[in-house]
Amino acid sequence: MANVKISELTTGSALGGTEYVPIVQNGVTVKTTAQAIANLGGGGGGSIEIGPIKGFYESGIQASRWRSTDDTKDMNRVSGTYSPVVGEYVEVNSSNNLLMRFDVIGSYYMFGIKCWIDPAFTPVNTNNWYQASCILGQELGGQQQDFGIIIDKNGFFALGWANSNITSSSVSALDGEVHALFVIADSTGIHLFIDGTEEVFETITMTGTQLYNMGVFYNSDNGNTRVNGKIYRVGYFSPVKVGGNYVVPNW
Image 1: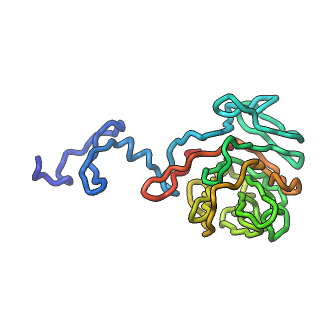
Image 2: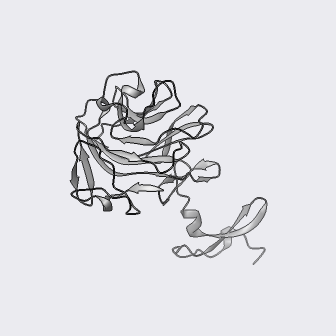
Image 3: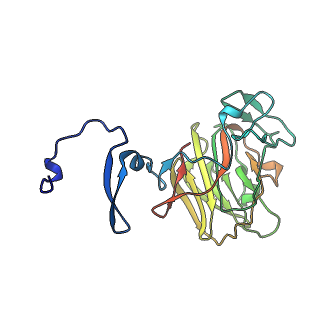
């Protein structure tokens, strides 16, 4: 059937994922499977299931603690309170002090959170990221290469970075929807993904030595930055790229 056009072949049935498909890789024709192609997904370089180095999922939410996926560490509350809905989410307010501590210091990891922001929440009115309502982040003293996912004064998801900079997205944080947010800083800059799409990129040279005590729904250096809403998942990942683009975890 070497001389038969693809358009002339018999139509196949529904794919099961195990079917072989020829592709060209590094100039060589090789085989892969339909499932491997499907796993690449869409938006932001793909969406596949990537296990976190440290992650806190719905299944770990109990009445008295929130245990990580490897069942070795609780989310460090330090002080303050949150209201857990076992197996679903934790609801936090102005008394939250949730911290995600890292076993390895470094900003070359991808940090992520799946959350819902209370539409009635009023973001801090500021032009400095370290004073803004913070979803996930840690401000370091002085002019350092720190960053965070924040809500700008107009209610949009934004990237806070370096000394005081804010770069806003066009996605509202107050729309009443659940959103998956991911941020990674590498040697070229800082990338902010919202629901699988890269919405913000800022060029800045990062060294991989920042961030070790990430605040969750607040900036761990500023208690006035707390956010009201629900947290479903939070964690950090080893970054994965396909075709030069970051792959966003399938949250």
